Image (cartoon, rainbow, N blue to C red; front, side, top):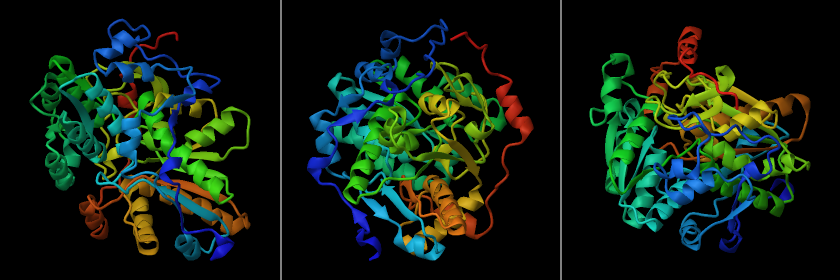
Length: 459
């Protein structure tokens, strides 16, 4: 075997991190404050506690604690599927004939099939600890909704999921598995909320968006006693929970005496990329050796590559706090894409600030046809069918490996395989039948979305 490096590098249960990492504590320029939509002033824990669990509201605004202890109940749950393996993509390297070493952190080894369970179990735990009846959420492709349904089932909590309509229609099996865990799933936009009914007045909004589903989930949580809202990406608290991916990755690479030259992650709201790069970004922010960081987003929803760095609502209904982030506008409805988990109009405030300041080095966008082409190759040579979201990172990892082939550089490349594609077979079928709509949004549609940004405060 080349270099005597194993195909899979595992940590032991005892090596599961005992604390999450909070990147904000090391950021030279913290992201601009979240704003209360009613007052346009920075939010407080009291403001957020009417929507989120109190402990999660505190995590959301925590700028000082580098490490946040993982409660023992959560850590014990993690042992069901963590530590996740770090895998050397030997077969992919061979097919590409590249001198690069390619590694991926595989997060699909649980029933939800994705990394989302890392935060879902934490958010459900804090809801249960607070004595709540249940939680609400939105989901795009369904990975987050599935993970939250599992976590709520474990803690015996009600789970109300608003799923983007186009994704629910594309992925009925995702709905079925959420319902297996007793989640109540509603296609969004729906006629069950004021925001949903308003959106349905315009047929152009029928497919839905994560922004609309967020509005519906927040509305339900605020109007129903004993419920709080949860979110699977974007928020600071989520990036804190997902930091376990990067912490484990760094430990595993140390075991094989490797350090990545390039770290690559798909980016929709930012949970996966933020988690994967966390421990390595800590190195950069503290002046140590660090990788080159690449965010990969869909051409259908290119918030970083074609959006604007500005304050915007995180939802279509304008009921959530405003965040300064790369955005396409809260009213932007992306084209129907099978990478439903990446169809959010904005980007994590943390990642947006890091990108704006040059710490996150590069953002790229790729098309559906490009990602399904490499997904098929990866499945053939590495034996795992990747989720469409994950295939964005695979595409860019391959591009970087081929650059090494041209230059002869022996770079170490790390990317995140966020989950499996076994619930995305309709997408793979449509790709084989050449039936994917691969038209990116027009300049006019993006300009229309950005035209409705709120007045920009001086923060």
